[in-house]
Length: 274
Image (cartoon, rainbow, N blue to C red):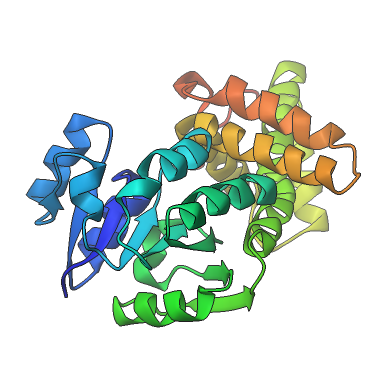
């Protein structure tokens, strides 16, 4: 399926989908090195967003949370009439509704897409929730591109995003609480006791492994996750719920981003453990 899709944003998600798919996408990213990577991956690297979107029936927006709305507004005029803009960014329902207004005003169709799991190792099997008037049509096109786990959850833009954002309150919140717990346990020299007590109450996975995994996720992706959690806080506020813990998660994810000195090797003794 040559040039059947435009990938707006060629970061982790965009590049993973492109490499997994049996198709040649047009790719555009504001970072020149990512455009080079797209070429190396066999994609059609566009010189700009207008070239990426020209005549393409489906565009998948996979940018950063803070760029999702500007991308929709800036690139909407370049969409072919009736083309579908699948917004797969982790942003609040109100943000997606604003993006939808921009896309639809320019003659395009907008679909709210929620990616419900890490793209690795799932790749094209990653769960996707779709919402919007054109969600059914988008589902058919995405399945034609090889996405296997796609489900329409409604025709109202923002519904898929609401599921994602509210779910993220727990998923990203647990990571932030884990970091806070481990920092305190290490400072107090009680890591073994704290982790063993958690193991005694929950056996699904040893907490040493869980703690190492959660903290690695924050160190590697904390900045992006903080932006997503800010949108989760916005989502809760719009529902009349004061997002005390969610705002705290934004701060902790931000503080942990890039802090490789805080990484834990689950196979080695943790500081404070004999």
